[in-house]
Image (cartoon, rainbow, N blue to C red; front, side, top):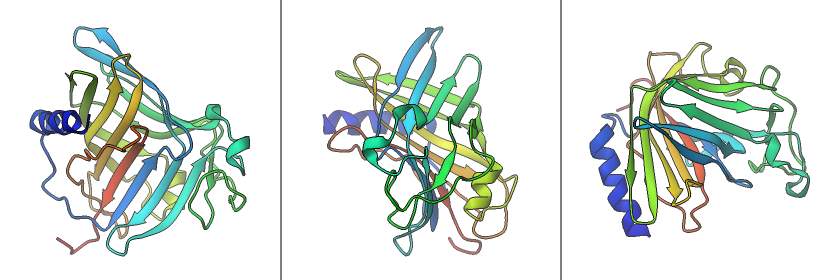
Length: 239
């Protein structure tokens, strides 16, 4: 299985290319710590749709210091047992319609000092996120590579983030991004087993919002359940 992941990853890189700026200090990491799920569906005409691909955690990280600076969770629960999959953030896209959106059904909440979703130290609601898009984008390129037991959907394109989320993370309002590499792994039935998306900013903005993309993330979880979206950020003046 790991060998096939590696083979498909190389194919994805060849199809869509890699970033020229891979070393970054800051990243925004969309992850699925407590929940996973979603489906990739063929639409015909070499088009695809992603339906309800799950994220429950969004973290701002400093990769140079190896620290997490801030984070939010999707949903209000203060324990994993009380958390609902319906409250998690969902990625939906349609390549034929050229749409790509992550939405928070019930809002984003401060994740607390432990940086884990659905625990007792959960913070307050991030106003302006409930029932609204967290991320909105479109496609410039995409491809689906089919392996023996799994498939890799890879894509690129521009996107922008919810201004309330940017403000919570101390990033400049109106900052736009490119999901420079996107890879979504599915099993033979089209069920999502892993997804990684890497963003870069399209303009120079004040620190810490100056961003650049890293190379395609292709490190599958041993359990095959990790789903994460990563946005890389480089501090001005650093190579």
